[in-house]
Image 1 (cartoon, rainbow, N blue to C red):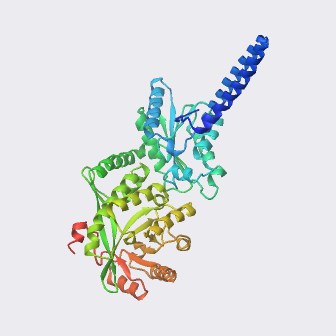
Image 2 (image 1 turned 180 degrees about the vertical axis):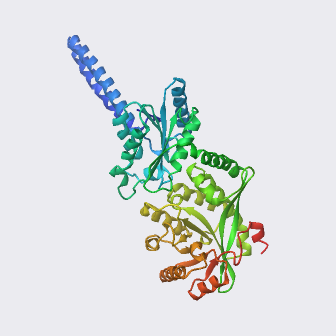
Length: 484
């Protein structure tokens, strides 16, 4: 069994080291005393015995520490070093002429980072559980690597039928310990095979990732082996992944703002910041396409930082022309849970001197909430600073009615899908219920996707006074907003 580690000589090591040293000194003193009493043979035997005990003790400490540090806390992860070790091992296996081996890539669906698990001191350490399980099956024919903060990558050297491997991993995914509250882990696993799928190490890893990502939105399915029909997806997703690095650095991604109108007086109440990407190589790429890729390939921290910086910069101009208007920024549940995102916002506040009371974070419903306690604590930290929190796309997906009572939010945004399909009567009934419930909880209600006067009048009659949609304005760049 092999996993990349970084050795650290901690205080615990120092204390454990001192114990045998003191023991050695004690025995040495006894030996000297006996030697003085002309019992040299006994003294030498005792001294040699103490040396052997000391060496044995230190060896046991080293072995114990290695076992305990099979999977490090995320703060010790050195992505560059781990990737280098993984690539070296992978290339060595190819050069040695292994007939076949498998690359298996495991990601956590409902968590963007192992950091969130470790920061909560979660007992279900994925890496430890996985290694203990696989060691019983494969012994030393398996290597496990942490190449980033949200996944594990495995080199499986045993030659066995794919179905056999699949059955072992499916059994692992169904282990009770992975599904315990308060944070049940949902996993996705992709597999590629050398040399069937490719003879290049990097492409083998990429194909394993693509296979895993192909089941991201398929509940109940944990495993997918690479197949040639995924080739187009590899091409499209890889192109987006590679182009995103340049897009962020070269500022190809821009921010547009869609006004939110108070229909009681037709005044500007706020603006929602929306990402737009016009790639030099790919053309216009929809956020629906590139945001999931950014999440899967670890671009979101840089993208979040870029968006916060740009919106806070634009705010200084917007507040002059539209005093009192707020700006809404979309944030995933898992970014909201991460301490790194809170730190990012705090640092931006210091630089750009933004009034938090004019900033709203809209919680998007891309995935369900699996740790409400952590999320609530983070929301409360933002609210103490003056930020407002909204539930985006409410009434569909994972943003359901229970969240109104469980999360300390300030606003509710009714999903635009309720206003499609000729604005049917059943949709009207649901919208009425959402408005009534939100108003009873003293929450602000904003309706999205409003395009027809009939929809506006319906909302006004039912006490929803804030709308956003093409009936008034499309999303616009900052220079267009300032010319209104």
